[in-house]
Image (cartoon, rainbow, N blue to C red; front, side, top):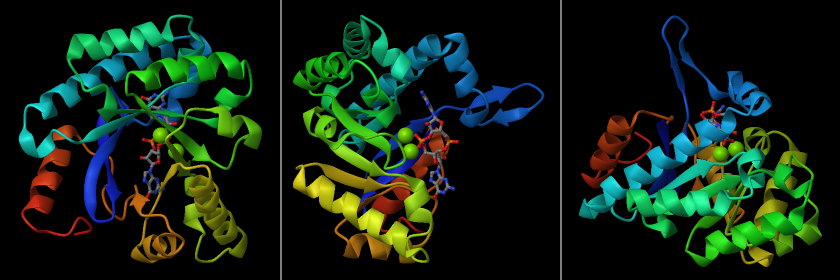
Length: 243
Ligand code: C2E
Ligand code: MG
Ligand code: MG
């Protein structure tokens, strides 16, 4: 698992866990090259459990270190995992087994969860949320969001898709969409984070639109946990997170 910092204002509040496949001959294989196959073959269930377990174990390790105890980890969850009848039980068992603080675990889902059996998804999210688990809607704006479902989901955060952030300074349509997502999140009482922030100018645009949480290469690439911890230490020592 690699970890990419999530920043709020100028503080690192946690990281998104992003899986990588270390292949003996092909080197590091990015998730886009194997997650679709894992979903097709059903292997995503075992892979997803492994990711959740590893992230929760990491949370439990950080919990013992005062300067890291409040960090959150965001974990991507596939719709197939969500559809499993005992998804809630499995997540809670992992939390119990690892000793992770549930309110430090953020599950990222995409708008694909809104396509079928929304009531089942809402009920499962509600059960996890009752234990403190946090939810973010990933890649927001490129899927099939029905706004009426959106307000029924017990979400905490919308994550503005990278495609809008990328051209926010050059494409007026993307600028309007990004601003609209920020306004939508605010009026629904949700937090908002922008992904794929690569420049200070993009960050400044988003801040002017009222979005103060970011993730992207401008701040930090996804890195092994030791490197993430080193970044954290250097920020604490007074260095800017963008250096
Ligand atoms: P995602 O959840 O939207 O993750 C963000 C992706 O954007 C990551 O790609 C990250 O490396 C990349 N990224 C972050 N900042 C920037 C930036 O500033 N510029 C650009 N160009 N890219 C940036 P990655 O790690 O290749 O992951 C791709 C996708 O694979 C993820 O998209 C997620 O949908 C999926 N994925 C990754 N790990 C898991 C996992 O454990 N489980 C599941 N189900 N899916 C996963
Ligand atoms: Mg994600
Ligand atoms: Mg995303």
